[in-house]
Image (tube, rainbow, N blue to C red; front, top):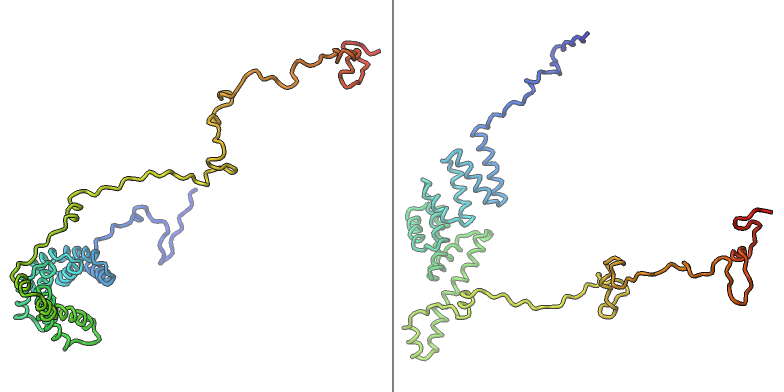
Length: 318
């Protein structure tokens, strides 16, 4: 008889459940708000760790869920400028509705578009906020230095130095940039003029009226660029024998070379000769024969160590 099932006690469930109840249920997709929280947590960790390329991918995932997220857009713009993707940054600025004039001016400056960058800086100075003015002054000083206006760059840096915190990194940057602008300004106003005054008037007038020199590459450099570089010819060198491969007791160049037929069978070697007989086979004295002319007859037993036997070959015992 089959055993009766034991009923489960109150408050307990049976350990045996139908197989259809054990099937894992499909996980429901996370809500967009939960996914955004996870993505922003990953984004903060990536930015803090300096993984800017991965952070840009995370920003793209956030913008797929919420294309108008302001924090994701600003963070992506910052990351594009940090990774020197200035063309992509300008395209993103054009899509953002809010004003990003300073970022646009900086991207234009890094793309060597000085005129456009100067125009944007003038608009910021006229309509910008007080918090942006300091960054605008730094960018304007760098732009003036690049365009050769060293006096204007030096004045801006001196103005920034008066109001900067001595313990900040900005103070160290300004102290580095001021000597560079000062040295160029001194060369134009003092050093260059003194060198020109020491030259004869005919040479000085010729230099002042001559057009600027045209940069031309030397013929040797042009030839090396146009013609493919030739690889040096390989020098044939004799390979040295490895000492590890030389057997013991063999001196290279002194010991005779090994037999070239050492890998062949003995029967296939040229030094092999047939007709060799076994030692002691045939040709010896036979049983009952005489040893010499002077010796007497030798019996059959004498040929076996001088021992005699009462039994002869084929004989009977007496």
